[in-house]
Image (cartoon, rainbow, N blue to C red; front, side):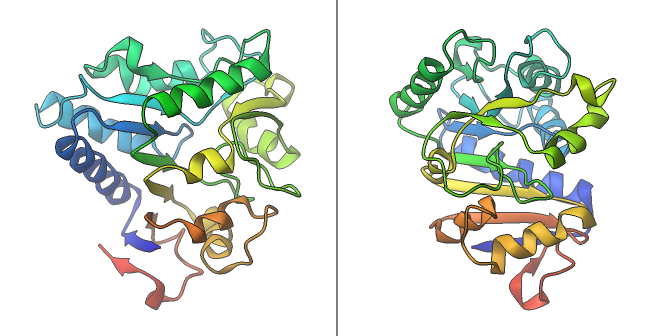
Length: 249
């Protein structure tokens, strides 16, 4: 596990974008696993800027998003389908047919989960998976539980996650209570994982991810076993780590 600590959110976002740039430059038909939430927005802004400056070409790139709210229409401005188009896809030259986001409006969630896993396999797996992390150390929408989920599945969101997401909705009653998410097993199959975290509120989750017992009660702790993972943090998110744990960049 490599840990890179940047001075602030802006520098963290630039570093993350540079890693995606390197991946796509080396392999133009890269399969990217993407995340939503406030943390990766800066990375997406940097990628759009790199594209506008003709430094990266997304025409052959394939993407798979981690998750989507269940039974929230894609036209809703809080859906992750809307988020990804608004923050990235509408501003780059990615082909619409190469974009994959779980269908949260499906009539058969079990069939949707199976089909999503099959689509990832048919694309020969994910080259680099971008992750954020929740204050409870959830990755994707894999909440603390008694077991690690292998594949894409429907999950009940915890009260803490609902509370954290309430700031994006008019009221807490509007926050979806379920989501379709890649499982920890799906995430773990990515050839490379890049986890982003910023702010003091994520510091404990980061510490537990790096040094804690590997347990589904701390979902991100499973990443200790991954063969190629990099954490890109700002100084606040790294505040509970020993300086020996990381490299300043």
